[in-house]
Amino acid sequence: MKTPLMMIINPAAGKGGFKRSLPDALRLLSDAGYAVSLYFTECRGHATELATQYAGAFPYLLVLGGDGTLAEAIAGLMPLAERPKVGYIPIGTANDVARTIGLPKNDILAGAQHFIDGTPHEFDEGRRDGGYFNYVAAFGAFTEVSYATPQEAKKQLGEAAYLLGAVKSLSTLKSRHVTVEYDDGCIEGEFLYGSMSNSYSVAGLIDLPRDEIKLGDGLHELVLVKKLPNAAAMANLAAKVLSHDLSSEYIILKHTKKARFIFDEPESWTFDGENGGAHSDISFENCPQAIALIY
Image (tube, rainbow, N blue to C red; front, top):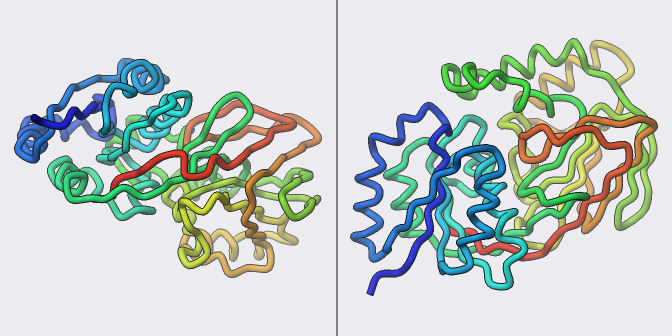
């Protein structure tokens, strides 16, 4: 008897080229012993609804789409008493999760084979006020790049769209006064950027040190970038970040289970690369080993 597999597909992810290879991928999964049930998303948030409603009946869930689709699907699993093991075929632009766990990007056949050959690993989920986030919640510099970049530009330019957006955002960088409470204390100051993450890569631009991060250790990474003294320092830091170098006196990295961010006025946030609205007081918490992620 074949193993039941729920597959959530975002038909709008990436350039849509994966559709040509979908029948071959389904045949590959079937030959490997899976009975695949397909569910297509129709709008933002639909993957959450599908996962909550149907995934409890399956031992495995395979998500085909971008990081946003994966985040939605995992959020939909959180209310379930028994959660399926989760596989991911990344079809999108930034693909931070794929960078982090070493998945083939924008290649549905290779992704299906990777799922078949992969093994489950413990993965922490993040809880935020009003919901969940999968790998990053962030404010400030570069965070608006993902959701502000036009969808057509993402399709045509891929990662270049994000890089162009990041360069354009340099002229609008501003600091904000923030108080951050975390496990080991409190930090207060003027910051250009802040985040809680469980990933090696953020927005396809920022790489965190892999030797300091474990994805299932019950801790999130708190990253803060301090206000810079002048334009030259800002340009130097931007160049470092874009070249994946975080060795700077202006960058703070902490490991924590919880964090609370308090602003003088509402601040715009992104959750897993999507617009998360403005918040003046917001808290985050690690949900340890919430998901078994296959890779």
